[in-house]
Length: 86
Image (cartoon, rainbow, N blue to C red; front, top):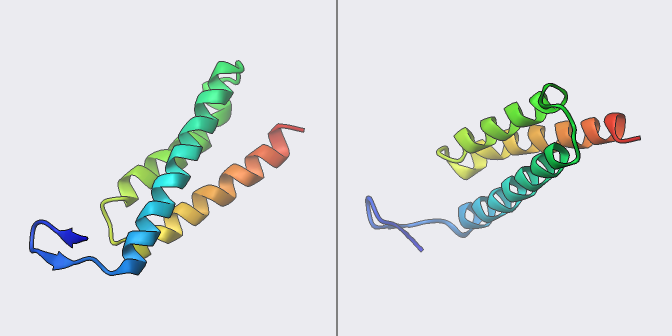
């Protein structure tokens, strides 16, 4: 795989991190959508929606730099679900 703007090969580690981040983003979007469909108020899930927005913005960064943002968002989702869905 190459970066089309400068025709350099993208390191495999960046490709893998990028794919993992895409999968995490899709899972977070699915969860937020499900919560909204289940009647959870937007105000209750606003921290999750903010984390989702942060992840979307982080995608424009180097995948290794964005990894911390994604890990923070995943941890926030886990904490929220543990607390709110009991």
